[in-house]
Image (cartoon, rainbow, N blue to C red):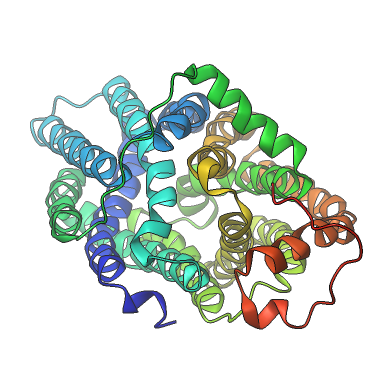
Length: 428
């Protein structure tokens, strides 16, 4: 796991972003609870999630084109600064009592637009921070562990602060937390990466990126399964206040515990990925982890005991992280460098951009059939998707392993793979 931390830029980012993400998770829990307190509506909870993540679905792919053109380091500095001002505005409106559900939705859209640019830029910038591919798996695993460590700490703090001081204090702390990541970004020594100048139209660049993904089965299949997992996960996140209040008969502290339980499991999954020494077997891991994620979510939806629910949510977080981090690792190692931004923008679209569809679907279904049945239906579809993905593994392996061998990404892996007969494979 120490591989990626050998690189100064990644160390700075790891600790700075780790502090900022604690504030981000605090704000997310506070926004969900504030929306539930203001509206007491499952549908509006779903609408809030839908509006906040819809920009990622609509804009992220186009942002990926510019990620391949712009200086990624400066782009991230700009997006993090804008997110800090969004948190400050949310703090002021809540503290003064002027906040309304429609203002929450508007500010959620603003943050979604910022994230639509930030996420693909941050994913594509990862390779620049570690200065090579040999520590890429370690960096992805540690980044995921940072994210989920914050998911463990942030909601727990948020639940206590909401109950004692109110949601406004969470928003204030989140605004201040951005100073840590901005300081880390400004302290980096990044090699000059000139902007890619091209006369090609943006839409043509976008079409080239989409054609690349659609034409290469491993990337296409991985993104489709990831989209299904994301679609399944959103009902759990969006409807968590209903599980906390109506099924488990708790309050904001219970909500914080439930969200943190997912973080515990996800952190364990991320550390497991970070400890891997090769990418062999990640395809199989993606397949079984997505199925286990769906089954764990179904079991959680059937529980009305807090202790059991916390344990099942830990499993949900663990298997979801194995699936998403393994997918990220495979994509980052096989993608062509000149299309990295566009592919990672599609990763963001599948991982985060499908969430608005899941949020709206969750809110609509839950208002008719209840939160538990909504989760059961979506999780069942995820299990079916994992079985379909498993049937494609052999064909995917035939395409991916020769690419690893030709590119020399993982010498310890390639030495054990026999040379393929015939002419060299063109790396997509």
